[in-house]
Length: 376
Image 1 (spheres, helix red, strand yellow):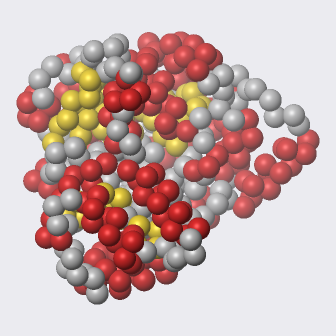
Image 2 (cartoon, rainbow, N blue to C red; image 1 turned 180 degrees about the vertical axis):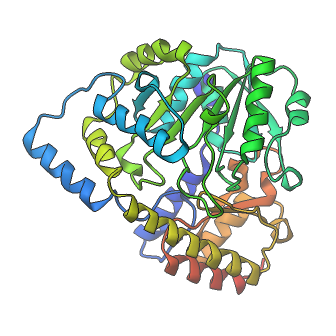
């Protein structure tokens, strides 16, 4: 069966192992999951309490509350100066649901979709579950972890391409020029482009550009999980091309009905609390500096630039040739939880580890001290 061929998501596996260790009474420093340690904005939570007390919160329209869709469309004007018709905005049950809808709406079984390596593993795994062929496109430090036209040509025929900016795990932020190149290349070659923008708002050298500035044919997916600090609320959105709007809505009706109503209420209110959310980004920036310095002191110096998101992707080949074994040892011997690079790169991931700095500064500081004193 196809489901049996889908690999595990190792970040979640490490999370489960870390939870088991904690349940046994041991201390764990959580650097494995890309999850803010903060809640949704306090003011938005207060709105949720009021909504729960005053209305039944049943199904919404499949595409989401019109008030939220309008607010998301306004967000593109405020942040990017891009006009997005509200009809193209669909609210979904987290970016994960958005990707499932996108893959079903855009591709047929057997078609070939480019995925960057290193890159988010659930693109590849979800494509496999749908009988769509993920085509690895290796990227590295030489291109600042971004794909080039030559790399795309070298992958052979592609029906689709998934890119992320900022990316997981490298934190790469694509420049406007790079995004324009990708948009034009995909348009000229008939490649459906899917742009993962869920880490927008979490950047350290200026804002990230949206693919909507360069392509009307791209599917753009965003989420309330990261910048808005709402992982457990399972809420995101998709900006669809005009030609696919109806297909997305019909798929949503049948597969998910709608995103959770209460989460949509909180998401709408969260837009009014950006100073609180920007303060989280300031904390990530400080954590980033602490982690980079701490890893360097531990002899882990070959890392991606980490211009956005909240990860450091590091080469740890000098510590061993199996990142899964290394991460298990760190957890068992030190209580430091990190994610093996096998999640993100099927070819070279055994040489790398991803560290998340979305959590507490205390965890990061203690983890770095322990790693510095550890010997393989």
